Image (cartoon, rainbow, N blue to C red; front, side):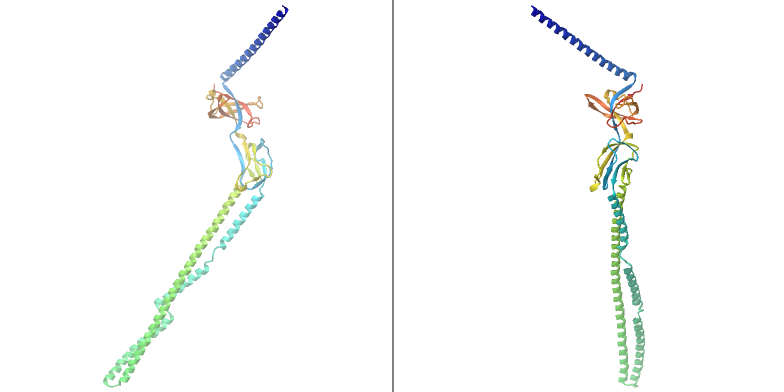
Length: 397
């Protein structure tokens, strides 16, 4: 009997404890549900009464600069670290570029030498030109002697011929007179024949003079032909020299121009806004080192390949990309005011403006969200890439 009472007592205790635990559990669930409902109510009240939407966002940027070196250089030292804030003129990396500068000097000297050699490769045409002028003069002289028969020997022979023609005429007249005397019986036949012989001798002398005149004229013609042949040879020689000089000068000029182009390209590689002598400097008003790809001793610009050195974030392009639920995105438009509350210091409030609303929605944690960019009016050190922040979008009433 006592044992039965004891068992009943234990069972009653278990029932009481179980009931108590169930009551406590229900009380907690009710409290949690009430808190959740209150939270939802508060968010709803906030969105409606205060005309704003709050969304979580991550700090990013819209512009960065990658610095490359496309000429032979060696990294002497790296003056910054990833995440460092920099300003315009800050030294980022020191380079050894002596080898490249010497190559530029060699190129300049080679161009100077080629310009001097440009005059030396030209063949002197003056001698050939003088010969051509001389031959042309001789041709003109000989042609005149041939056409006008002004040659000295021809003049002498022509004088002899004229005289011989007169002598023949005189001899014929004498013969006619003697012939009449012979017919009258005044002279012998032998005497008359002597007069005939004189005419024959003078005719033969005339023929010889005419042959000599013809020989001299033929010789003059042959000489003129030889001079013309020589003139053509010299003119071809001069033409070839002109062509050769033109070709050689063109080749040399092309070589000089190509060298000057190479020199300009080499010099332009040093004319970068981020290069100051042998130092890489910041050319941004405000920036941040995102990545460093080199260490001291790194070789850059080998095998005509640009070497990556640094990537710098433009701090003036810092934005917060907020994840707005798609059901609220239509209530936001570009140009709207926003407020950024950085997680690094929730007491800070940074004024911003909506600069971009994505046209694409993505799924995250079972929800569809749209990325909306808010650009702070005055970025601070609390908004660095990768940081998070709440963005409150202020809607028009």
